[in-house]
Image (cartoon, rainbow, N blue to C red; front, top):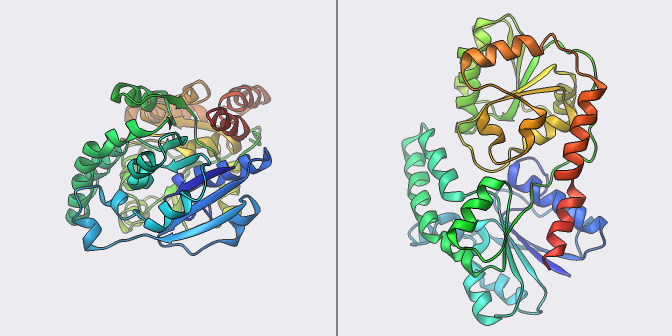
Length: 370
């Protein structure tokens, strides 16, 4: 039996962190592990779909508002402090996995009240670095202030992880950071995801694809950079697909006939776009965490063209084409658009992804620490 505390309701599994949580639950259930899931509700309703993977599911309101904002603890942490959660966890002595620094408001109290209990933390990022970089690309001055303020609080609060028996890191770079911090046991456990097998199509497609949540500052910057510096200088078809495209993306794409924006595609449409594209192109200025959209593209798409930040701290560079400057990206794009994707490419991906990034392997890494 295992308790997992999630920062949000992990279904539908439609963005980074909740994808990791949801497919970890599925993998643990398939291995026979009974999980009691504790979810903070934040913009999502309780989901009966979670019950198929969990022994029990409990929900707690997130305490948003001024009181949490004025705390010396990070807002994302303080707003997830719950006496009811502590009470429920103290009803037994089973191990606890806290999903993210977000859920660590109860860590010190659990450790004090039950010193011998196995308490683990899944670190989805080096959070203060992630927030600092998000602040650097945020256009809204009020949200930029919030992000930069919580980045400082997160850095001060991060040593709470020293109270955990195990910290699970998503990349080798993150693992090195937590080891340097002094965490007692740091284990590499890549993100869980929706894919079990490589299903990429062979042959040629006729467009390149960028897919992401298009309302997020990091992704808005990436798309506008690609349009202005790569695709406006080529005749290649470029499809941009994702949730809630920002107005600047629509405006930037509208003057280029080779660029199409697909807003809010459903899951079937998105997977069809990924599978039929010739090139998945992804760049980021944030070398933090493991980009789940890259894993999905490697399992389901053809060629992946990325910059170095997209694969930082991972082994995924072995199955991607790396290009950092605009000139390098254009040259690599033109070459890949004419290069058929082959069965050998698929075998190379399956070998790497099956041994390093499978959901079952990740679940076994977790269970080995209990």
